[in-house]
Length: 363
Image (cartoon, rainbow, N blue to C red; front, side, top):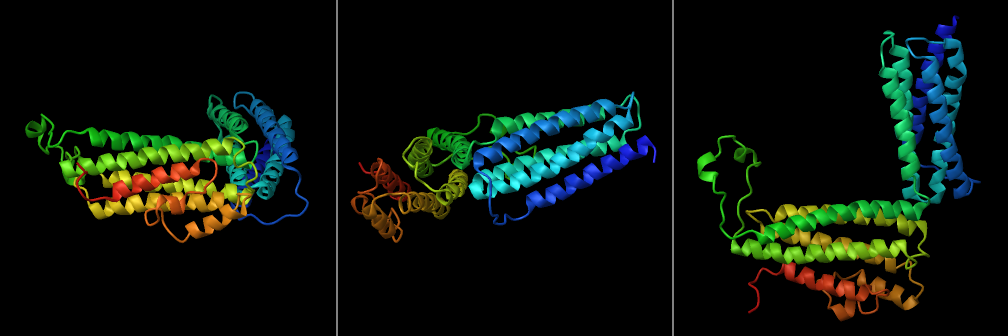
C-alpha cells in the first residue's frame, strides 16, 4: 500500500472506531467492579480531551489538501482512534458516581466522538487542494473540547445543580408570561385589528394575535401568577439549599431524582401558562395547577423522606405522601418540615387553593 492508501485506511478505521464508540456510549449502564475514584476518572477524562485536541491538530496539519504528508498522518490518526476508545471507556465508568454526572460524561463524549468522526470523513472525502472543509471540522473538535472542559461537572451534586439552574431560568420566563397576562386590560383590542383582519390567515392556524382575557380569566391568571411566583421561589430555595450544606448528606440516588422532578415541574408550569390564554378552560387550568402541586409533593417525598436525620420527620413524610397539599391543612401537612420548608409549603398550599378557586374574590 502507498502512504496515501495507508492514510485513507487509517481515516476509515478512525471513523469506524467512532461509530462503535457512539454505540457503546448510548448503551444502558452496566454495573462494574473496581471503579476508580471520581477524582481519578475526571482527571483521566480531561487528559484524554487534551490528547484528542492535540492529535486532531497534528492530523489536520499533515493532511491539509494543499500539501499533504500521508506518512506523517499515520501516527496521530492511530492515536486518535486509541484515545476515542479510551474516552469511551472512561465515560462509562462514571456510572458508579451518580446517574446525572454519568449522563453528562456520556453525552459530552458522544458529542466529541461525533465531531472526530466528521473530521475523519471530511479528510477522506477531500479532493480539492483549495478546500478548507477540514479546517471547519478541526475547529469543531477544538470547540467541543473547550466546551466540555468548561461544562463537565466536578461531581454528581454539581451536575444536578446545573440541571435545576437551567430549569430555573425557564420557570422565570413562565412567571413573566403569566404576569403579563394578568396585566392585560379587559376587553382591549388591537387598534389595527379591524384594518388588517385575517388577511395573512394566521388566525385559522391558531397563530394570530391572542384574544383579550375576560375579567374572570384575568382574575384566574392573577391567581395563577401568584402560584407561579411561589413556584419559582420554592424551586430557587431547593436549588440554593443544594448548593449549601442543607442537603450535604443526600446520597446520589436522591440527588438523581431531582432533575426529573424539576423538569416535570417546568413542563407543568408551561402547561399552566398555555392554559391561561383566552379562551380559558377552567378544567385545563385546574389540571395544570394540580400537576404543579404533585411535582412539589415529589420533591418533598424525595428530600425529606430519606435525607432527614430525624425519624420523626421521616414518619411525617410518609404520612404526607398519602395526602395532597390541597387536601390537608397547613398545620397537618408541613408543620415539622425542616430548614424553613414548613413555611414555604404553607405558602404553596395557600397559592394552590387560591389558584383552584373558581369563585369571585372576597370583598
